[in-house]
Image (cartoon, rainbow, N blue to C red; front, side, top):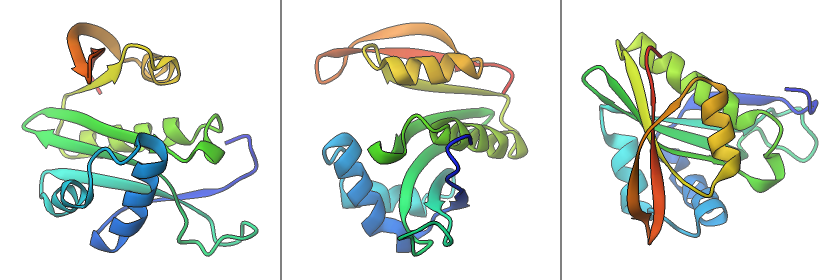
Length: 157
């Protein structure tokens, strides 16, 4: 990453729940809630990947969650259900790093393709997904509280 900031990626467990909720509130306005994230943290077919600031970064304890991604493994499909980066850490390559690591983990679990949905208006996300080889497969009218969602597909991963 060109920003000079270092991040550490790791698979999260339930101890990360409070930080997941904080980051969800900041990025999505409280989209899932405690039970939703707890379910993902406990689901054997889910990977919840977190990005932390490295400990040596000024004002960091090494436990500062600044991004996350969630993937469901369904047979040979990796379904990316969430990707969030703290606003202060956006546009530094962290979203790409999280996404690529999710895809790497999916490959190692035997997944052959990946899918996701994204708001049609989310230009930053559209650019990210297309830049790593996702292609638009279809649309879901009104999928996001009245806003259209686009279905993206990547095969092979």
